[in-house]
Image (tube, rainbow, N blue to C red; front, top):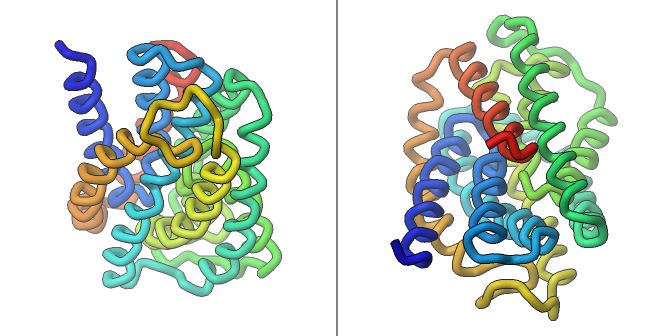
Length: 270
């Protein structure tokens, strides 16, 4: 099969899965897109591994941005977004994502992939072992914790190209006691700001870098971006509808399974 057609089919399927994940789980889909994009760039197209890692992170965040806008709108209409929390996290998340992207463009790609895999694995274990909180068992959370969380997860968003959604879901469920549907909706709104900061930085820091597949905008691969956006946004609307028809604990276990698979991929298990 022609490599171009093969790439389009692989990325189209990936975008669909990422969009469903964005709508159902409140994540940007980076945990699905980054491993596949890296494989396409490094293995199919022969891109330098470190450069492939950075391009995968940047392009993933560029897809997360419009997808997050679409999904947060759907969740907001269902009353599942805690906008007070989003307001506290969005500004530190935006600027910290810029800092994270700067670091990502300065270190070796292997370290980034292993760190990404370790975070996914830790998140899966934490979510699997967490107690099942009752619906509306939200706890008062200090303003400073929301600000710190926004900065921390925004930094990791820019560093690893994941949007930070799954981290925010964990924070809101484990620390603030949010019911998972509300955590998912709030996460998608935060992703708008974290991904915007990261994308801006990857465009600036990647400007003029050689070896990036054309056409590109900084580190953002525009071919991959178009394919992923066209497939992920429609799928995200389907995901939003499915999210509110799935029980909270089943939603959590689905979340855990996807985290584990993505973690193993980044460690090179398959």
